[in-house]
Length: 168
Image (tube, rainbow, N blue to C red; front, side, top):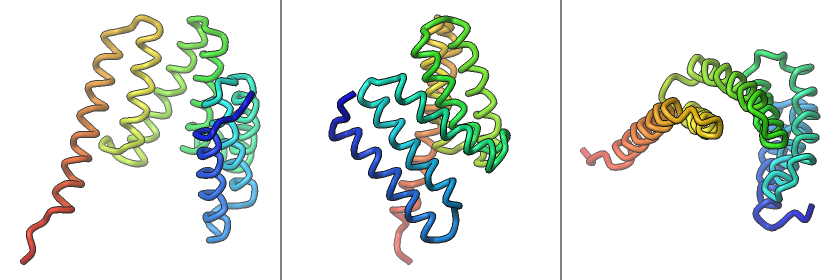
């Protein structure tokens, strides 16, 4: 697939993020490589090459499972990317249902790790809503998207209040 400018920016963002964390000693080399490969997968996804994206995501998932274990929040996030990409490739109902289960597990872990009001939780709720919409579970999709919007509005309100505090 031909990778365009927006996709290349994704690769650069992932690579720079991984490099900074490696240089700071916060990540192992395997984790840095995984982040860079995930960026390449995102670029393929952006370019519409789901098969190539899935291959990169599966490679990253295998490395994360070895290094961090299957229950780690980063591993679950990559597992969700793999499941959603597989569902998009196959298009069958059972693949979407499997992806939904992975995202529901990811959502629970995010709520435990970050709290119920976080960008990560809102993003996962949005992704769940998209998948539920795809399988015609529209009532669930509506509940999830409304919750995601409420979380984002709450976060935006907190950010606005912290930026515009009156001087004393």
